Image (cartoon, rainbow, N blue to C red; front, side, top):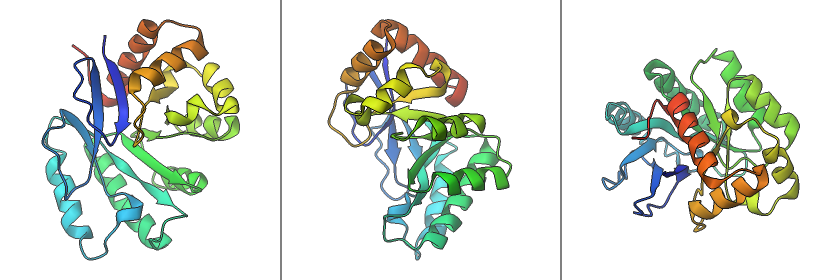
Length: 218
């Protein structure tokens, strides 16, 4: 079975790995088999927003574009926060209109993002990538029909390991984001935490990809 990587900035080109590669509108990598596309809050350029939104609208017509993202809000980056919200909401509308899930980047802005989701009455799922927070926040995410994606922090954070080990399988994904850690290593550690085989974990992830991205592993 395949190792499904829900969010990455690196293409491994391994035959047993399928990666949802993060794309930026102005920097499309044509070597990616499948991808998400979006304007990251840290890289918003006020002079090119309209151009990049047009590019997103164009590329989501590609059957290999499975999601919008990573997009979101980041209180530690230099981009004006109100501008971040404006660009975030523009991209959310595209996702909702086209029924595409959204890969979420959140830095100290979970409550704002969940508030926007509720305010806009969204139906498409959010996947909070690189989740590294507490059980209470995770339950708030799940209550809004959203998901968490776990990556390198799972290997080191004891509290996160406990949360992950007890989480229903249908609410999570696995990723390596921008790290150099092989996705196979993250799967092996995650399977050990949940006391299941790697093959069982791969099957669970395949089901989640089918349910959320509409992507069936052949």
